[in-house]
Length: 600
Image (cartoon, rainbow, N blue to C red; front, side, top):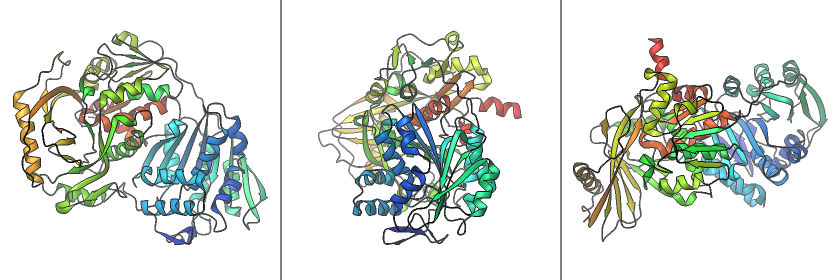
């Protein structure tokens, strides 16, 4: 179990000739030595007539690309879209990359743009330095410009990514930028199977543009159903190729009607905001009001505690870490999040666990730093004030908050129902899936907030067996884990003296681990609540039955997984490009337990 996880990819082996990156493994440039920006604008934007189409777009447009590389085409398209398109329009940019650039090369590319005085692209290139996904096979979603630009990036083989997109359905691309390495150097993206998959993932009237006019490429695209034309090339190339699908694929899209959400905690609020920002009217039902129960935590920690298994659970956590840490920087609610490193200590009971994690995942391209004794540090963690965050999320003109509960009868009527009610989700899920279909559990947790005259210096959040968050006047430390009977949540969860003493002992143990003197606590308060859990420690997120979806059982990782679950569900409801690969969707599926039972 110490070998590398099968989904971890190698980053690209890149050499630099001045301002031009070159793939050592392929022996080809990422863009023209004579001018990558000019090539991108002339071939891919103008070849697809995107400036005109951006001006005319009504609601959204999907642009697909083969070969993300440095992200140059994305940056050029994003800049032009923001400048030309109506302010209400959204650009979905879908791209495929089998060998993602390492962080150091992304930073070098951004520096080159700065040196060339290209301010309209330099800021976007800097966005990609830290927000680029970890090198993990599958789909990764990033959101820019307040939701106006959404990047769906598949890391891995493009044919597999196109097949996965086809399997999930939804709208196809309106335009394609075919920008792989030259076919004579690397023909992987120019195969007939890829061309047919591009046609299958194309919307009515889809266009394409590419710098190559190789005979094999033309034959593959014509066979897939594209009408092609040569145009004069740029930057010393004699020709380029443009085309349009001759028999457009027509993909039905039925926009959802009314959206009803059960629950105004973090899961429900992230869902409500994701739907509202897509122009949907949302009603949120919760008799307790916003940020009740487990979402009343003022110091929720962003920390993906990775398991060692081969399957998809660690991949969900890594995908969530990448998406959520960018999502939390959105200007509308950034003040609810405090960035900090998260330091995961070596475990006494399993001292070799972090060493195995290092062998499994490495640094994830700089997301993880490794200290002495195999100590793990997440470089971009932090903690959030959930009540503050939830209230920000629910402040939107399309969101109505109601103090009544959403009943099973209401959830069965027309429209879309989203169940995100924490411990109260079980009754609604049982009604739709049956008692065996939603085996949700409950786990009590208590946090202790300490105050002291000599507060801790600003530093990393400490995690391992529990966690400790350094604050300006003390610590937030916890949490206890007490399994409760699987029944409806109690109306009152009182603090326990025993659990307070356990938390204070945990704080002392942290200081001993750090070689510091135990803190002198002046006073302390406690907060206790109940989390909803699933037997496999993975959230339930997806369609329950037609018209009913859910996001629940986020347990103690709600800050990590709720935003990604909301993005996935809202995207699926609106037939957008994928957020998660099919295998991860299956791992999150609410009916997975009943399917496993049927299989036995």
